[in-house]
Length: 213
Image 1: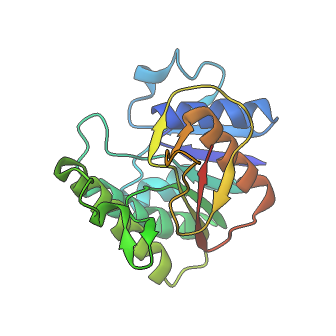
Image 2: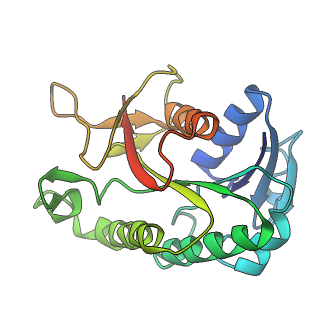
């Protein structure tokens, strides 16, 4: 497949690019500043683009079979980046004729009990809430959109951090996945595996699912 990855210079994005390349896919890496990521994304077609601008998305995406967005709020980006990217990606990809989109989502909107989200619990820190609420808004945008783009929103476990690629993970729907000790985690490497597995299988079209170790 020809895959365009938005946010390719980030920690999840770079791992997603590497996983896609290892599987033999043709990858275009979209970043704001290609020169800043030249060594990190060596050997990849790196282009400048802005996932929050539908015209920019429409310019870089044509000719691809699938888009993956790993856009987050790190490196000074504000939470409003996330819903802005959701709207721009749906519009821009539609204009570009790209039929599928897979999105790195958030864990805060997952439920720990019926109607009780992770971000609603007493343990959820106040400083995390702006990003979590922005991710929840993004999910609502995808779910309510009238669009010809087949989106998939992938929520990681509560802890998503660099680690080992095992190639194994569990999947769920809207409920936070925890292990026998109550821990919820997945490595960025295995999260990238899950994104590419979904790219190749299309098992969760127009819905959210979650993954954890």
